[in-house]
Length: 83
Image (cartoon, rainbow, N blue to C red):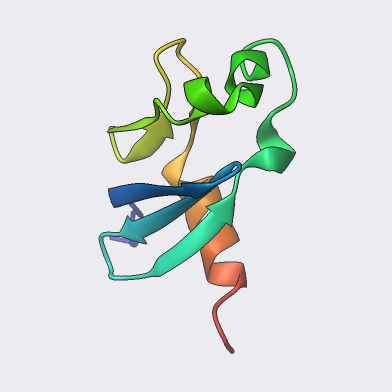
């Protein structure tokens, strides 16, 4: 069975950046600004609303139903990992 990434901890940093820790120990600060397009993500442009994120099923989610899949977040975090 292949690895399935899951967010286990998330801490707000600043602007649209969240420090994320995954179930394999990978930790990174991810900038969510590039994903804040489209109707469901529009409310997240308000930083106060953005800060209301929570972990749901291993993903980062918001009260309006918006979420970013853990696989997407893991790829983003791993891209910053030294080769």
